[in-house]
Image (cartoon, rainbow, N blue to C red):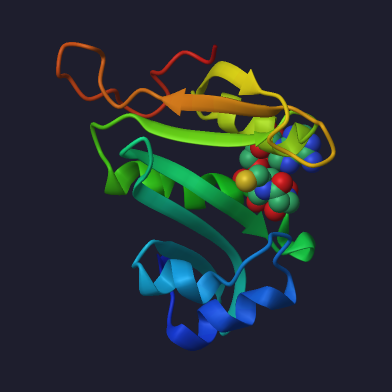
Length: 149
Ligand SMILES: CC(C)(COP(=O)(O)OP(=O)(O)OC[C@H]1O[C@@H](n2cnc3c(N)ncnc32)[C@H](O)[C@@H]1OP(=O)(O)O)[C@@H](O)C(=O)NCCC(=O)NCCS
């Protein structure tokens, strides 16, 4: 399995298992989409943004094909984004009830920073996390060193 940038056709094909609104081709046109390919099959993606969230790196959408979950693909996709922004803080959000996503982010060292009510139509809170890219003194934090909060 490899993580890489998507082709146009792959970005289009993500709708076969995508759980989110919108068209992933738009993320791909912006150059902000990585996919996980298992041979010829695309089994997951992460869409991100450099500046749409208060001009900060942000993991916007993460989705893994149901048949391929719990194999470390989600974690590898997020890691790819952290690597792309090495040394910088990277933000992410998810619905509070999404146990898999919350466990994934906290397990990778993202720190819970707060929540916004009213953002989602079903009235669940959207929880925001940050992965600190430096130790605060300009030193990059090695994988596994960050403290889950
Ligand atoms: C959230 C999602 C992307 C996780 O993808 P995944 O490839 O299954 O995740 P991984 O296998 O990399 O799991 C990494 C860690 O996350 C946690 N995790 C993942 N799924 C979990 C679950 N169902 N229950 C509890 N913890 C879970 C675990 O800590 C796991 O580590 P472990 O397997 O070593 O215990 C996937 O469930 C998904 O696509 N969900 C629907 C869309 C969504 O909610 N996206 C996130 C919001 S943007």
